[in-house]
Length: 279
Image (cartoon, rainbow, N blue to C red; front, side, top):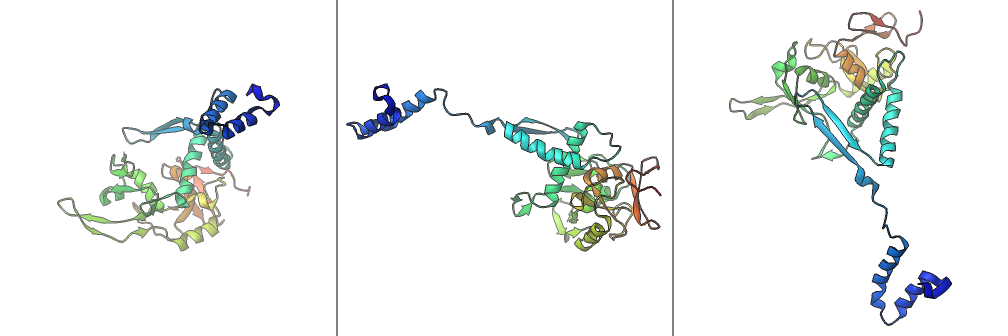
């Protein structure tokens, strides 16, 4: 190529193409590329991406670890930080790691609730749990009572929380373990009740929480399963995923008909007044 002076590479390739051995052009182009960039093309950065989800042996959850390229890391960080910042309230004593863990679950919860996940065998992705009716209705904790779609076995209390805002299908089995009858799927909180609760509450009712309605589950204040609570507007409270979990583990929300608002109580019965205007 040096023989062609200022014409350089263009003249060399043209000379090969119109010369006596035009079939050599492909090889010459490759040699020219190797000469220009001896290191070759940049490696695909997405090949660095990997994510490992490892369930705990006892069904108590699982661990996540992995690696992302620069662009992927920035996208995931931005999405999670948005949910982490939106989910902060006054007096929040969670560590940053705990906030980001909650943000990841809320991000997944929103995607599942909005049915924006890909269709799998004609169905949107959804959490599935199998449990006996006796264990589902039991007031006591029954270890390993339910099986989730991922294969994990969990206590009945986990499914009781999931069942607050879900579709339940009754399956009757015979003595040989074969299904005899499959009842009609029943959604616990129908659309018109949820819309009424959204209009009344405007978002998560937990004291001080700014989470919007589309982050929220429809929670039965008087439990539909254990306490035979009605599926009604009066017995329905909107709670974001994190605070729904809190309420199923000792906290409580109750409607104050005098002031026309929800009140939130800690496990010891004291009221959380964060976010309420002074009387």
